[in-house]
Image 1: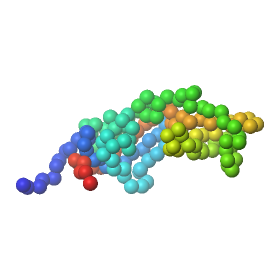
Image 2 (image 1 turned 120 degrees about the vertical axis):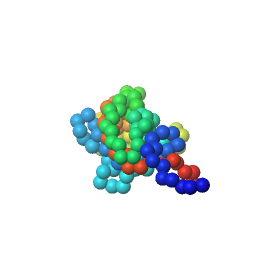
Image 3 (image 1 turned 45 degrees about the vertical axis):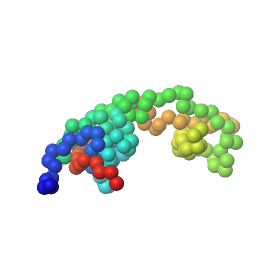
Image 4 (image 1 turned 90 degrees about the horizontal axis):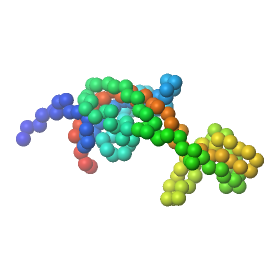
Length: 153
């Protein structure tokens, strides 16, 4: 069996993709980028990228670039007012909450859930458990460096 370099593989399920990306908000503020560090490598469908970010990549091949607008429904969801909770200052054992601070809280499943301190009013602390990018339309710019069939290790 002769080994030939696969040419022109396109991004789809079961492919391993290496790319550089920049994620920015409507106003151009960069939220995350691999441009100044190592490129990201992931397998399509492995959960590293939300489906809304994987979907526009499908069909791209090595060397191609793209810029995609990702709506909140396909990114981190809409801002949900029910995700804003009022906690008592006593709930913060040993830590003094400050407005703007991101703190980790235990969720019902025993995992960790990040929350942003929105407001402190006496003994009441308002915590927003929405993803910080919830409700935002994001621009996802990519440069595809490599597309290979995924290998199982």
